[in-house]
Image (cartoon, rainbow, N blue to C red; front, side, top):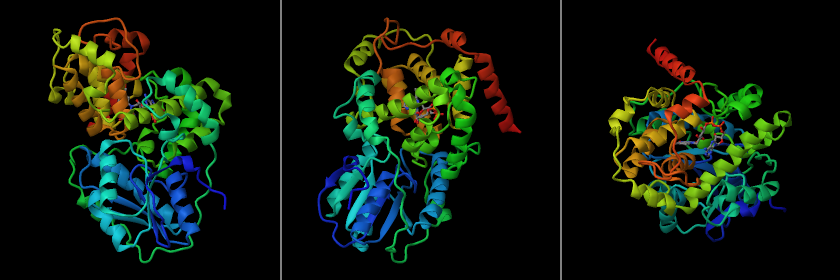
Length: 457
Ligand code: FAD
């Protein structure tokens, strides 16, 4: 039988024979039923061996500072995945606790023969996979279901910039940007799978409830479908020209769905490819969703210091070190940043957009992080505060895109050296005056004021 899933998408963490035993797909990053290479691979092996298949999600009580805003979005999306998977005879089994605490027992109890999991570059997941490997003896296969070109195929090292990464990715895209096979109805039933109790799952969380869930985006595959349709009909035509103008909403708003894997980037890229009539926009969008997104995964996969000063390139560390003692005319602490209490009304508006909406415009994200560097005592403090605020309030926080975007803004990652100046050294600078020249800052600030007023109603 021909292989359905390209084996270059699969990284063998531990070899072994799955035998005539059930297969589980333990997911955390790609929480969807359709268009999911990891699930398709797990099903391929299970069908070959005539075995039951389950998708398993281990729900931690806390996770890297996530609040109910992020957990709520994830759990609502998972409810839909559960409903979708049932149509295919595949249960979604919800376990409560960190995977390394609960998965080994589950594997033993159900005599599982193969553990398939998705690819997440964050350190915590690498540690968890290693612990599970230590505590079990079964084969473990990791499938990159998030990137179009698997991160370990696209490049075997940390890329210097988009310029070095882009040609490699483009060369490989014809082999990997292919259509998806359909998930099949699974003929071998999992015996008595427990039905997820979503209320109980929410109650199990030990997370901050003070950051409210948002209602302008509906989590899950259906919500993502709506956003996609809206985007391709109304916003893609203007994306090329206006996606860097925060006063226009030309961005796709897909990052929350992509972050939880509620929709596949490959599916979106395939759809975008059909919109040749807006070629400039099509190219600009594909550059973001393919090149920039997969470059971020490359950074976090190959640089385990992706969220620290050590992870910056040498030229950036050196220039930031040279400017540690520079006078800082404005200094704020984390609380002042969080409360949007700086002297800069544009920055405050961006921070409020993040807090209220759970998503800051992409252009403002750069300005926002760079100003945190300018107004902090050290690059380390700036980095820690930017990550804290981004991860606390962004629906799409804790993502390789976020760590990389912050490292780009503060630490010159994937960027080049610019003319030297105070505090920033040779790190690219952004200014209030520059924003004022580039876009209508009053319109952007008015939109945030309106959002604040709507919230009070
Ligand atoms: P669109 O412009 O519609 O882009 C479509 C998709 O392309 C995005 O969903 C994303 O997957 C990808 N993309 C776009 N811009 C980038 C980029 N610069 N780098 C990598 N991929 C990109 N992105 C997150 O997903 N989560 C974060 O927490 C996050 N934090 C950031 C923090 C800072 C300081 C910076 C500078 C960038 C950050 N980004 C983050 C990257 C980018 O700003 C967002 O992906 C984008 O704004 C998401 O909105 P969208 O989906 O509407 O974007």
